[in-house]
Image (cartoon, rainbow, N blue to C red; front, side):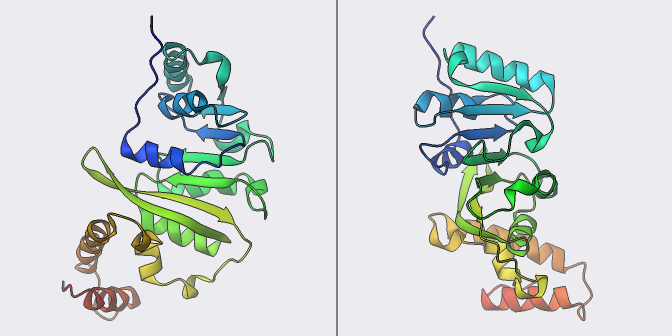
Length: 228
């Protein structure tokens, strides 16, 4: 049987492109193992680790690797979050497909991530992109790339972040910074940002006019030429 290398959707292909070459990489929450297999097949990384919390997805990942003829080129680990990794073991950690809050919880549970020269984080939150950006800014991370991509009819933000130790106070992080991040430098920014504003406009309808968040939303929408 011919080896079958998985094809990635735009979301995972973009994540793969942000992985540091020449260093070990971990795909945390690897699920079906498509990204793990793709990274292993590229030959660009000395070690590829796929990990998941549950045995079921890990079995799927093992089958994906077998079908691609890559069982010897990737290691699968069962465990919770980053507990499967030793500090300094990998140069990039990919976390895709979980919520912004779960992403933050996974990172907080691994204090070694919060170090200058530590691993690059490639993050693809399933929900609440703005929440994750705000968390990164206030916990000492810089967004190197923030790429809006469409997959299966949905917009995602694929973020590459590294720890720089300069945590901003929540009051120093603007609503626009959380909402847009660094997407303005990327193709697809206009459509992505318009969608983000549409979500914000819906949120605004449930807020009293005197609320600080309501006023911040009004100012941002006015600047973009949008009204509630």
